[in-house]
Length: 284
Image 1 (cartoon, rainbow, N blue to C red):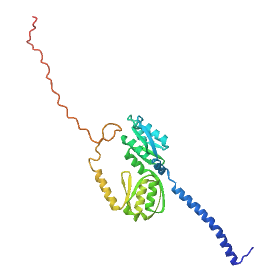
Image 2: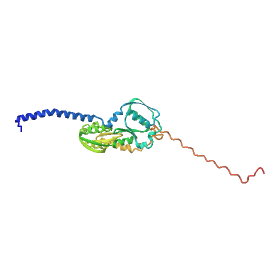
Image 3: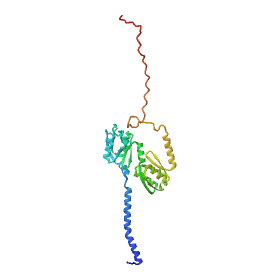
């Protein structure tokens, strides 16, 4: 067995560490770059959101809504899906043709303009764009099931990452800048997107309020005030009054047509008089 002096052994150890450190640093740098590239790579929903910003030229004059969506799917390579519950009613074969002309405009705006006359909207779910009624779309977006793994991240960063990954509109109150730095850790599977955002906000001492299709993260007092205002709006008897004319797929009317005046009462015509029993036949 080879025995080395103490000084020689220390020299050997230092030399091995000196040789190993550059290799370790190289591996760490490669892993760091790989992690950064993975983090920078957009997820399916984020990629769809970016694809909706592409410029398109369209000229629809006589196509049905289904034909127009099929054309967009082929042209843009975006997976447009129609709501199955509306498909069963034949909604997308509505005889009212699509009237839309776009010259090098954003696909997002063109899609909104195309769906507006039919009272439809769209949401991004995963790698698809689902065309449906606005309220149904909001429910589908907020209730989609997701997995989440957050480890000691500032709550503001965790919320923004979640919103970007799932293409949901989220706004954080600028006045809560200090609170958004609170570190949080959360691991969940198969839970709704809205519930996840509410839990993260709660862990950071914040509250989440839904405003249409937007989630607003703010203080508890402001959230309570906003929910109270929403409740008062829900109790407004005029909120749900219909403001539409026409039939299936009709666009909202700007004003209601006046009701026709009531018809005049029908005049009663007296029955013809019966012949008199004392009448005499003039031929006699």
